[in-house]
Image (cartoon, rainbow, N blue to C red; front, side, top):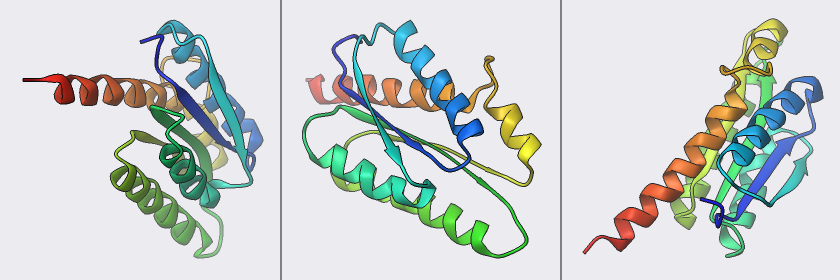
Length: 146
């Protein structure tokens, strides 16, 4: 898998959480033999889909890992950002044919977000990185089948 070209796009909002997700994703990339990847910072989760689509459409990456965190507050903002980000990332992946993982936490509390971004096996950044790498591998297998 070391030949995979990966982009890691991380939301700057909720840095304590997204930093943990990014560490988890980086750990998986290293464990899987990915020697180089490019990292990009998005202002927030809502910007992830456009950045991911731009990267996926550039022809310079085989997969994109999107990491972010949206924590429910007292307004409907959470619902709009969560849904828009999820649909946007899915649409970007379907339109470009490039695996783009949804490593965006959508939690009700800060504690839930921190638990999911800890440096352990349950880190959701790790899961997003695994999903991207496995999808790249499977797409290559499907395309090379007789």
